[in-house]
Image 1 (cartoon, one colour):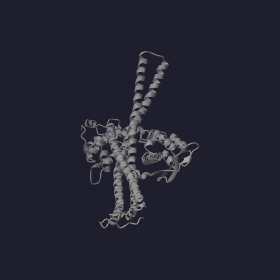
Image 2 (cartoon, one colour):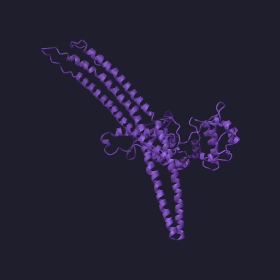
Image 3 (cartoon, helix red, strand yellow):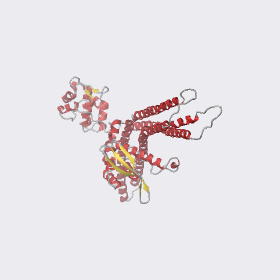
Image 4 (tube, one colour):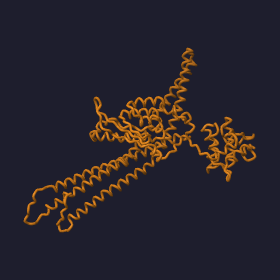
Length: 519
């Protein structure tokens, strides 16, 4: 038969399997059902992927012949042979029977849902944002034995509890997160103290407020992360109310170990990675770097607009105060021979205008706060996430890859020493010690290779997380537009009232004014 797959060239088992998994109205088999058949085998993910590539399923379905081909490849792979179509072309015996169980047992596969690869993050932005909202509030300053310190009230909506934390608690929590999740995008903490020269451009109060906001962003990113959010370490930080939270965190981390030791996919990560993972990583990293740069510029502009709104509020308030001072001047007005001055009546009316300018100042200040809270803060949240991804990329290259290369170099030196020892006989003890060290180094290299693949596995997921967060752009733009619409509407109403007052004040067009009583 020379590899010609058709109804007559395959075992009856093939036809029974087809009958069990095809639909009643169509003899084709959905690729999703075939993938479920593959998942029943004991074959590795890499071999399953090879078989899937060799069957024709461009439209999402397998023809009857394509299914037969897939079943033959499964059977060959189960026999320890490579699942290659070339083997089928030269096959002169009856095609082997795959070990899939009774055909009737396969009927249920048509009704099952597809089990996605663990490499894929199946989560939306809305789902991430719903995971938790953590609020960080500054509580009244306390004085320690020698120095005063700042304390925060941390409130989690998910756990419906409030706890008190100092910056040092955040610092230990962050350190332990990095230890446990070295291959994940752990957000950075804000500095404990202002950098040298920073307090010359901002007050200590402004620095503390900025740090409070940054700590809130840090906790929200952690509490909404699809992996971190389910960790005991995070739950302990957000819920433990005792005074010894730091030892509690360290104990929890010590019991758990790092993610590579606890993740069930760690040693199989290579099987789930696409063949072009390195090129995907490079392109994602470059794109995210460009996105990061653009969002930094957007944040800087939004900060300037919020600052201008605050400055506008100050200027409007001072403008109103100057009008009030002008109208409060009780100095007598001299009577000039040439004309009668209306200033005495006019200045009383001018004093009344300060009320509207005070209101305008309040509305402008509200506008600045909206821009800061709803726009700048959301931009900073996304920027913190983007920066954590860039930090992760650096850790991957300078940490995992660098250590792997050093281990390989050390192994190469040992092999050369061993070769030299066999050429030039040395003491038996030293040779055995060298052999033992080589075996240890080989084991270490094997673990490092597994960690390298797991690091790429996590990087791929963290890249997906960045792109899952990207729709936050629409939320930011919506908040920006809404704040502008509301701000202009509120201020427009006050300006309109002021315009009516001025019309009344200078109403008759002959310079004679109708005095406005100051409020």
